[in-house]
Picture (cartoon, rainbow, N blue to C red):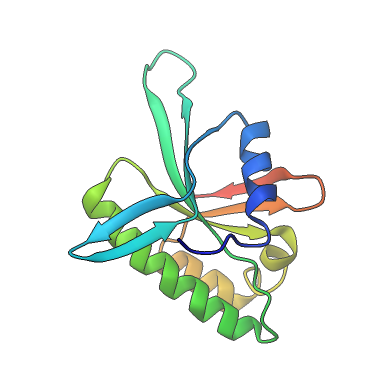
Length: 139
């Protein structure tokens, strides 16, 4: 079982405050004999005329290494790996990369970040670690 990211609890709290229920912590995936663990999965009822439930998986990244580019490389590699497997095993559950406002306002708002987020169709959940609130959803 992998160690929890330093922002794990802040993201969980932010999602709960946004009406989500954490259903798996972590969310396991298995391919052959390889075990992978996305940080967690959540769901919430769909509001309105449609009935059903929104389901998501969330991978939290803290970007704590000195190099923002290296952090981005590692985060994207992990995100793409999980997204590919998740799409095959749970196609109804999109994957979100969760980052703090500081990371989003930094490298992810620079041209390099915008290019890779757009071209790789990365879904992003931006949270505020101090207030433990969802700041922005990018689909």
